[in-house]
Length: 102
Image 1 (cartoon, one colour):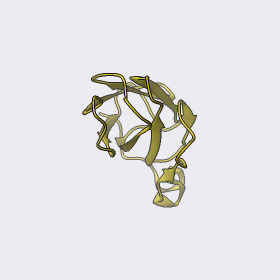
Image 2 (image 1 turned 45 degrees about the horizontal axis):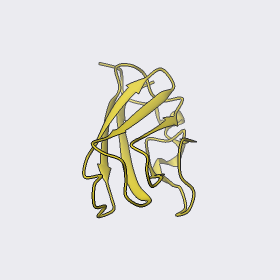
Image 3 (image 1 turned 90 degrees about the vertical axis):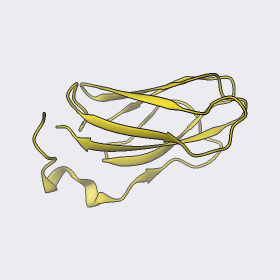
Image 4 (image 1 turned 180 degrees about the horizontal axis):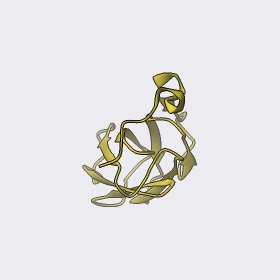
């Protein structure tokens, strides 16, 4: 497992929240954030310099969508991939927390 993220890389520990209406893949170089899955989509990725293949990432659905009920987060070097169980019926909030990486 990776070492804890050094304080200098924690970006003040505040999550980045992407505004409603902005959907799809984004860059968030912080340990936590919220993105929006577009209607009709079941995949997006987050560019994140803190992520490594050994990172621990937790992601959750934050909107009561008709079909998109759960997501899986997979970390890779510089990226977090978010896979939904189904295509979203409407724009759907996804929150993530990167527990280890770097």
